[in-house]
Length: 392
Image (cartoon, rainbow, N blue to C red; front, side):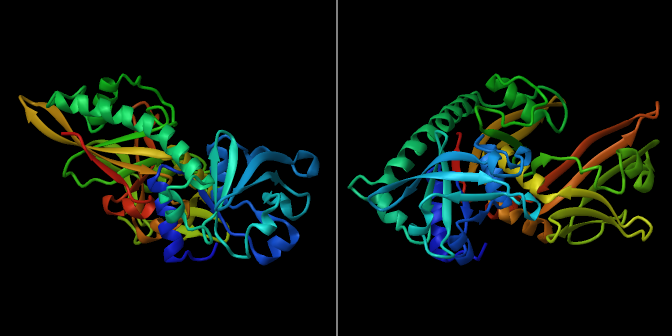
């Protein structure tokens, strides 16, 4: 996709500030002539996370085509449309998407926003539509009506959660549920009535909760994702530990942070390959080289699903009589991660990878997964502008 103009960026930010989640697509001149567009990784992730369509399980051929009711939004009118989602028999079945009537709605290289609402896809011409004027108009129009409906539903859950957090904050300092780094999250979930489970879906009615101690400056946990072992040179965690582990306090372990901007003490570094759309972990040992592989589209899909909407919660911590207490103080509320930024932030060193692996006395391996984390100062580079709420 081409670089966005400042005006287009402002219009996208205006939508996200109004709780509208969207993905972007750019029809080319060739695409308009042939009535075809590539369903890019971000489009595929958007359709999957909204339970519209999963290209990964779709078979090739016209007989497996999926049709989804769609609407093209104009200044004063709407065009009823249908989205065709399919994988052709040619070109390895690369995912395709097309909207009926799109040729009369756009010009080549316009940026389109795709929005899902009540299982219908709405298309907005970000390049041509004056969204600020439409949303602030005293006269009803299709764009304003759609955004208002979405915002009303979205804010209901966020307002409910915000109210509960303020009730918890009003209690003052509350005792930690346990003594551990994870105590803050576990304590908050307990107070919100959220049962502990291993689900990777968002915590509270579609909103992900991320809690941290105030002023700690720690990286923000995004998600955990194991590599694709079939594509990787190393096939399990034992091989990683054997190759790079070390003895510390009588335990053979590997506690590691890996980034793309330089090798760590174990000689490890992250490397993006955009031609293959892979992320590699690489060793400076020539006989090892690239030894772990992640598919970037899988990482982007995980980010889109996990952080569709997130409350990043800060709490003040204090210790009395060897027991920790928390006062929950503020929230940063983000929506709709900018998936195309993911690789760039890895290259910049703003997104890093952590794993903690050790071998127990019985020979078994204990590890806490492959955890992707974000430096605190890069939050506004991965998400549109956050809304900040005080809880006290």
